[in-house]
Image (cartoon, rainbow, N blue to C red):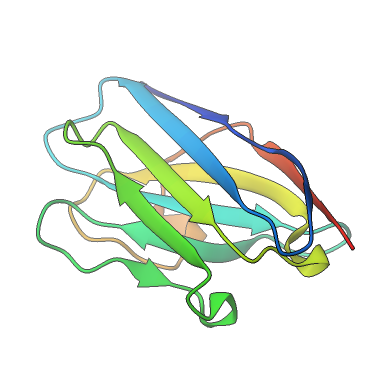
Amino acid sequence: QVQLVESGGGLAQAGGSLRLSCAASGRTHSSYAMAWFRQPPGKEREFVAADGWRGHTPLYADFMEGRFTISRDNTRTTAYLQMNTLEPGDTAVYYCALRTSALATRDPQTYQYWGRGTQVTVSS
């Protein structure tokens, strides 16, 4: 089993920044992709960003327009989401997900493990 624990959410003002972290533990397999999804209030869960194993180009949702950056630490067990120039529309529960494959995808159904989510609220 794999456990994912998100942290770093909270309240931010429009134009501000937050950095989310997601720590993976347990039987994480030899190579895997990690991703961030979010679920705004009253809406469906949507893809935000994903990072494959070493050497793969990260994937991003079009709506971010370069405001968010996904990264991982050297051990590849912790993923980060740096969110800059936050907007009220970024308010959502942000979920970390892990896929037991080196390749990242935008499809949430391809991710086997999920964190419980962390709330991000952006005020105008």
